[in-house]
Amino acid sequence: MDTAALTAWLQEFAREISAGKDLLTRLDSAIGDADHGVNMDRGMTAVLAATRDETPATPAELLKRTGMTLVSRVGGASGPLYGTAFLRMATAAGDAGSLDARGFAKVLRAGLDGVVARGKAEAGDKTMYDALAPAVDALDAALDAGQGLDEALRAAVRAAEEGRDATTAMIARKGRASYLGERSAGHQDPGATSVTMLMTAAATALPG
Ligand code: ADP
Ligand code: MG
Ligand code: MG
Image (cartoon, helix red, strand yellow):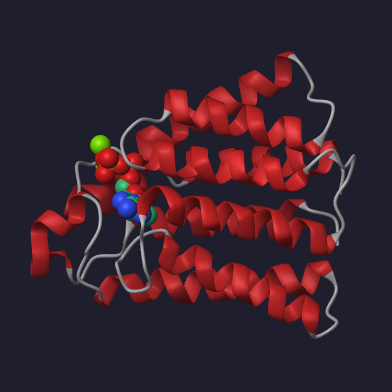
């Protein structure tokens, strides 16, 4: 997949965030400060503007510009987390003009590593990690098993959805929701929900 395909992924993610803005607001109002939908929508709108005005030449350039825009425009916890993820993805993409399925999986894993480096989340902390980590693992496993990118991305989406749904029962140990302690249980994590949209957008927009 080339820069245009990855741009289509980000456009689809922006569309999903915009369509899911109220849901993300509702989820973040239950265990946070009700701004995750607005934060992400503002950030992705800025990303689309930043990549429309001047078309990036390589995947790395696109991912870097996305990360820098998210860091500067999203704020809160999720701005640095998503921003770091995309900046790490850019580094992993190197100077390649396009990525194959393996290359994309490697880029996504670098993004996950960035989330961990920035936020120190572990499995079960009730964060975006709980959806993104199983998705990245499922993508690798499906490619290892010889599946094509289409099928592998669908497996990654299923893993993200399961991880997202599992956050409902968890007690938050990171971020604002952790201030609630046990009262955070019974609510789906907003960041796990938005990062599932990132995976869904990949399955929708990227060429198999
Ligand atoms: P804020 O909490 O600053 O208002 P957002 O509402 O935009 O920021 O984002 C909240 C989301 O950020 C949470 O739902 C969670 O998924 C994610 N998050 C918070 N802290 C961490 C962390 N340390 N590691 C990974 N994800 C985190
Ligand atoms: Mg919030
Ligand atoms: Mg906030």
